[in-house]
Amino acid sequence: MSGLQIKHKLLLWFAGLVGALLLAFSAYVYSSNARFRQHTFAERLARKAAVTQQILALDDAIAGQVIISLPEQVEQVFGPGGQRVYASEPANDFRPSAALLARVRQRGHVAFSYASPAHARPKEGVALAYRRPDAAGQYVAVVTAYDLEGYAQQHTLFRSFLYGNLGALVLLALLGSLFADRALAPVTLLIRQLRSAAANTLRFRLRPVNAHDEVGVLAGAFNELLARQETLVANQRDFISQASHELRTPLTTIKGWLQTSLAYDTDVAGLQKGIGQAIGELDKLTALANGLLQLAQLDGTQARLAGQPLELMDVLMDVMATIQHQRPDLLLNLRVADAVARQAAAPRVLGHAHLLRTALGNLVDNAAKYSAGQPVALTLQLAPEPGAVRLCVEDQGPGIAPDELTRIFEPLIRGRDVGAVPGFGIGLTLAQRIVERHGGRLRLLPRAGGGTVAEVWLPLLGA
Image (cartoon, rainbow, N blue to C red; front, side, top):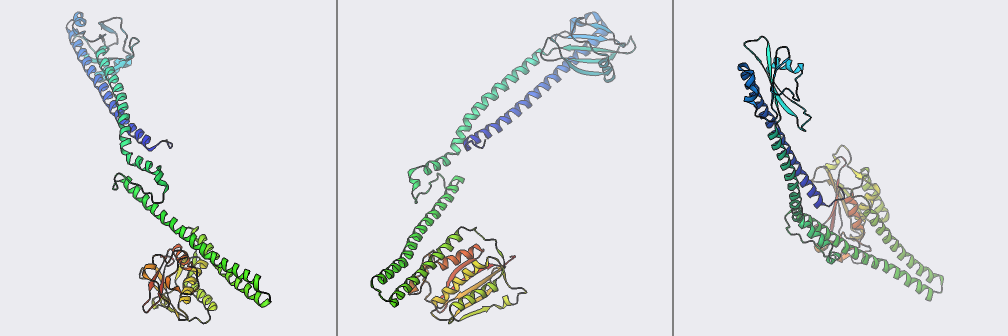
């Protein structure tokens, strides 16, 4: 059934459920009718048996002529010793056993049925125990007959249910198919749209019949996915274009220096200068390639990394030591809020030490580059949200224009006011994605008095 279409599954379930209800109802009515027939016929036989015993008490000779009215009706009377004292038809297909006669004398009234060789359905009978005034012991009057009319009606009812249910199932299948087609028409419309030529364009969107029903909501969610995919494709194109430009620039410079040295430099000093310039450009190219590689590797990781417990102060001190070694003249000011200092244990986060050092190192290095020798302030404090810590890195650079904040985290995007500050526009992108992989967030805020504040929010271990 797993290979069937939803339309066929709906049809089978609908037909199966309704068919089962029809079958159960028909079986209930048929069995009720069978019980009613059996009960009614038994009552008629009981009345015949009662009449038999009353008439025989008057004159045995006229009993059979008076009470015979049912098909194949036979009356028999058995004496206290089990001997048959009367039979309306001496040759008949039923002779009660001694156990049945004893049960009748014990209970007074017994209804029974038995198989007859002449009929597919059983014949039925009733036995009554009574006493005669002129004799001792109990007599038993037995009346048997075949309910020809009742069985005929029951057979007619069975045929009516059989053909009626088959016809109802056929009609149900037709109506169910129409119902499934109508119910799945919105889905069919979406499938036709997806298979059309327009679906090959990036701006393709689904147009549901009703935007507010379940299919419309699904189409809306799919359109949102298409919009995100369109944005991703556009960003990818921009990224490839910008990466090509960034890679082409140092390669062109390297080629120019080498060609110049090859053509004009005839002494060792000139060659060393040309080769040194080429090596500097190669260093930039290597740094750019490493940044792009880190970004690609990070995009291939899981949405949230399962790392190990880390003390955030240790990671932060390693970052500050590295930056201080690279920039000996830079003044780094670290302030730890009183709420953090009063904690019984140092703030701990769950993550990867290398990745966190990379993210925080990029933020501090950016702040140092754009501060133009001015001090860089770092502030570690508890976040307003419970179970989180916040790190702020403040620079005194030119700041970021408000209209650039939406794109500044995209790869290879830099602000307009960076001037001659070297960079490729990868550090912020890498930092943001690393922070997000650790369940946190990174945002840039304007600093009072000029500059930018990079705010990192990270969840504490066990929060």
